[in-house]
Amino acid sequence: MTAPLDPDMFDPVCPSDLSPIRFRDKWSGMIIRCLQGGPRRFSELRVPLHRVTAKVLTRSLRALERDGLVARRARDGRVDYALTDLGRSLLGPIDAACAWTAAHWDELLDAREGVR
Image 1 (spheres, helix red, strand yellow):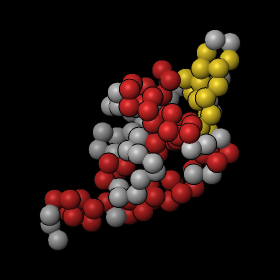
Image 2: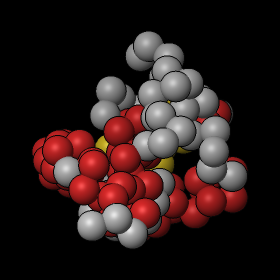
Image 3: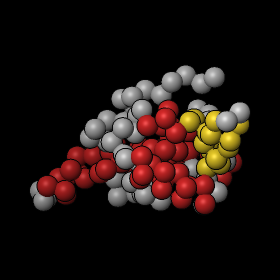
Image 4: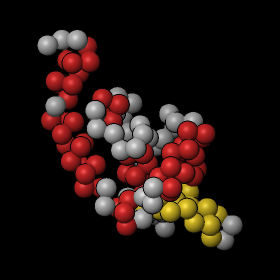
């Protein structure tokens, strides 16, 4: 069994909202991050992704599954989601995008606020 996800793993002022680099949609990168430690049930994903509605989370998971990045598995009457090898290959680019955003955080904030 994997450790529970931290409910505060994504800061409310998460750089993903500020980053111009997107992985499919606003939530996909965060979903992939949640799944990097192993399979998770929908209810487990809802803990750190509490700002996303169930409908939008379902839509994002289905899109990731359709793209071959996430596998949906039913076992013992339970459904879980896990990264595929293709999905796992996105962890490096996501790390790079997060590092770039962190390095340019102030510039991105200034641009958003119209300060140059």
